[in-house]
Length: 512
Image (cartoon, rainbow, N blue to C red):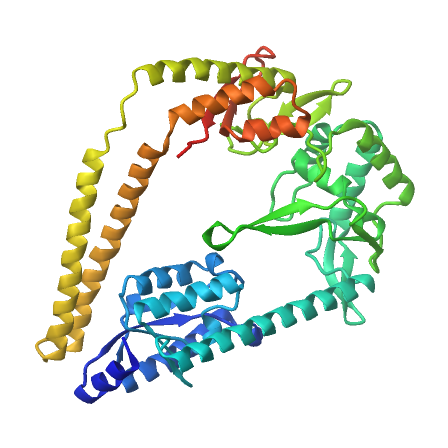
C-alpha cells in the first residue's frame, strides 16, 4: 500500500493488514532472547493497536536464530515470501537493521521485495514507503550504516579475541580433561583429575603400539566415559591424540570458513588450514602429558594414517560413501602394513573393506548402469506428470478461493458485521487451511520437478565420460569425475563375511 492509502485508512477507520518481525540485535546481548523479543512485541503490539494495524498471532515472526545472511534466517525467509505474495500491507519492526544488515545482495533483495509489493516498513520512529524516492534513499542509507556497524563490531571482536589468545587465554570450549576457569580476568583451563587420567591412558596406550580401535575398547572397559555419559569411539580418541592443548598449548586458526555463491545458493564450507597457517601458542593452563610422550605419539601417528588437507586428496570416494546402517561417512585408514581400508566410524556397525575393493565395485556398478540406461533410452518415453499437474491446478485454484475468502473477512470486519474476536477466529481457520495448502502445493511442485529433471541421456553421456577418463586421471581428478555423476553411495557389509562381500547402492546426479 502507499503512504496516502495509510492516511486514508486512518480517517475512515479501516484496519491495515500487517505483520510484526522480531529479532534481537548485538546491542542487546546483556538480555535473554525471550526478554528482548517479549519487550519488542509488547511495544509493537501497542503501536499497532494505537495506529490501526491489524496483526494476528500467525502474523508474528520471531527470529530465534542469529545469522548475518538473510538465507540463514528462516523466519525472515517466510516473511519475504508472504510480503512478495501481497499478504501484508505493512510490516512492523523496531528499526531497519532488524530486517537485515547482511551483504549488498541481501539488503537489495529485502528492499526490492518491499518496494515491488508496495508494502510499508513501519518502525516506531518512521514509516518507509519505498515507492517514494526519499524513503527509499533513507532505507538504503539505514541498511548501509547498519552493515558498516556490523562489520566494525565483527572486526573489533575478532581483533580482541586474537589478542586474548596471543596472551595465552583459552577462548574455545574446554576440551575433555579440563574445565574453564578465569585467572586474572583471562579465561584459561584447569585440570579435571578423573578426565586427565583418561587422557594419559589414551596417550600411553597409543605410544605402546595400540591403535585407536583397541584404545577405544580399553578405555571403555576401564569405565571411562564422556562428559554426558557417552562411550568413547575411535574418532574421539583420534581427536584427543591430535590436540596440543594437552601439552599446555593453544591451537588457533585450525579451520577457516569459505563462502561461495550468492542469494539462496550461498554456502559456507569449513576447511582445514595447512600447518603453516595454524597458530600454536603457549597457554597459561597446565599440561596433562609431557613433551616426550607427545612427540612419540605424533611420530607414530604420521607413519600410520592417511591425512586429508586442502591440497591433497586421500581418496577419490571421500565424502561420498555412507554407512547404510548409521548414516555416517565411511573413513579411509591405513592398516595392515599401509593397505588402506574403508571403515565405519560407529563401533559394531558395518564391517570395513579394502578401499581398492570398494573402488573397483563402484566402477563395475557404473558400467552396469551404462548398460541399463542404454536399454532404457531405446524404449524411453517422456515421464507422465499429468496426474500431478492436474492435482496442482486444483490446489492453486483452491488457494485463489481462500484469498477471496480473506478479502470477504476484511470486508465483514470493516462494515461491523464481525467483531474482532469473531474475525480473529475465522481468520485463524483460514490461515491454517492456507498453510496446509501451501505445503501440499510445494510437495506437488517438488514431485513434478524431480520427475521431469532426470535427464537419462546426460547421465549416460557423463557416465561414459567418467569411465573413459578415470584410470588415467590424477587422484584429485578421479574424485572430481566421480562427484560429477555420483550423488551418494550407501555401503553395507555384515561382520565376519568375505573381504569383497559388501553391497553398494549408488545414486546418480539428476541432470536437468
